[in-house]
Image (cartoon, rainbow, N blue to C red):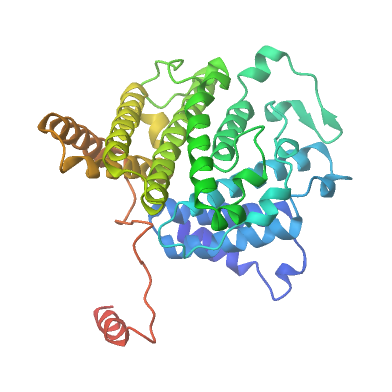
Amino acid sequence: MIGCCYKINQSFRSTTYFDTVSHQKWASSFLLGNSFHQTGNTNLWRMLEVESMQLLRLLEVHHVSTYIGLDAIEIQLRKKAFWLMFYGYVHQMHNIRNERLTFLDPVLSCEINFDHLMPAPVDDEYITRTGILQCPESEAAQSLTSGFNIHSEIFLAALRPKGSDIKRHCICSHVKDPALRLASLREKLHHLKDILGSILPIYRSWNKSDITAVPFDPDDIANIQRDTIRANIHATRLWLQVMLLDQIDVVGSQSGESTGLRDLASCDEREYVSRQLLDLLNSLCQPSLELNGLGLVYKVRDVAVSLLSSLHDYSEERTCRVTADLHEFSRLLSVLDVSEQCNLLNLQSWIDTSRDKEITDFNLVET
């Protein structure tokens, strides 16, 4: 089905297709790319992601001044588009291979006013071309866009904690001063741990619905949508903590910090984060987890892999705990990962035909 949609999309393109740009063109590339990502076609997804990034850069969605003259609906759509691409930017910062291009760069990210790019925290029915209709506070607090904004703030916290000094967290400064980078990473980690207090009550991890099957009632559909966003919010928060712990370990070892106590503390933190994630996954209904697709699978897998360092050179008690957690992660991943092929983002999934001629010839014969 996705392949057919892609072929139809390509058939509409002439040599002048990119002479005009629009949010619609971005959306078609972005949605097709994510669809291929969900089915495990990483290589085509990667190319469509680059196309999506280029279209948004041409639309200048990262500059608030370019929104002047647009209607309220277009402004809301472009702001959401910015954050959807921003998620990929933060993901790329934790990508081991670093083969993917990025939506932003360190200099540009320091100049962006992220607060002004947050979408209006109301559901779509309150937005018209002429403006945003008045929405009761109680409804705005439980709107899907409010959940979207919380998720965006969590990703932003991994780049720059709210209210912090921009220069302190700029990558340019970290290259010259590893100690500053280490302090920045620890501040981000601390902020991610404390961000729970700022999350709206409806999106807190313990405030979930009791739906166990795919719903059909409008109220149940709204609840399952919130549960899906809730799962994403808290899984992302925990995943980012593990990613920051990995970087702290690397920078700490390079700066000559004492490794013994630091490694032990790091293992404790990883165990605690893993236990929180397992509790979260086991407490939410299956539909709300499945709707998050492979994005959730990758996060769960990364958190599980971080436990492997705790299996060696530590007490038997810790090893037993970690082994039990890894078994539980394996069970959950066997249910959540429904992609059509095995894929790992950090493994090379393409072939250089000029360099690997023997492999290419073999594949052609097999085909």
